[in-house]
Image (cartoon, rainbow, N blue to C red; front, side, top):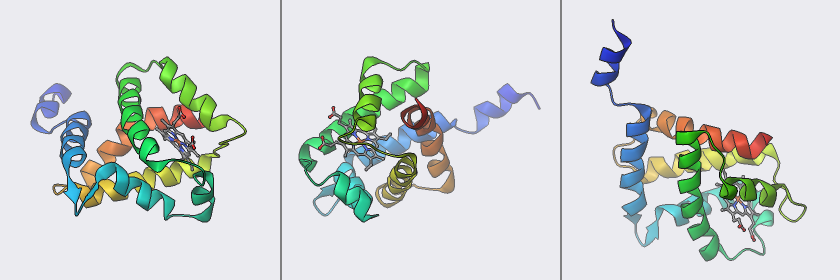
Length: 144
Ligand code: HEM
């Protein structure tokens, strides 16, 4: 079959991601929105993670994460790391924060589990779409 024809029938991963992101960014469970729920899940994963954020104002952190998503998506779309991406790498590499690679994998797992909770149309394909879209930015953060 012509590969372009088959692309028309199934939504692309990018579309699956976009639609899922639109659903979760506005969803609430009780009083808790998606970004707050992500940090609650992430911090719950290990004492090492909680320790990294021990001095952090989590309200500020939450809105920075929302903003940083935008830059991760631009990086996915263009393959070009903007100044913001560069600064994020430096900040996470710096002595004060010093994030090692296994924590990025936990970050991604926490993200998928939070999407699963907040996206009422979540499927395995949604999870894969999120992983694919986040992969370039995450790889950049880990290996740059
Ligand atoms: C792709 C994944 C990640 C993204 C998009 C991200 C995003 C951000 C952003 C936007 C900031 C604020 C930077 C600034 O101060 O200007 C930040 C700071 C920080 N991030 Fe991440 N982060 C990621 C992964 C991680 C992981 C895996 C950890 C592990 C625990 C982590 C721990 C921290 C800490 C400790 C800070 C500093 C908080 C403070 O200033 O008190 N991040 N992150």
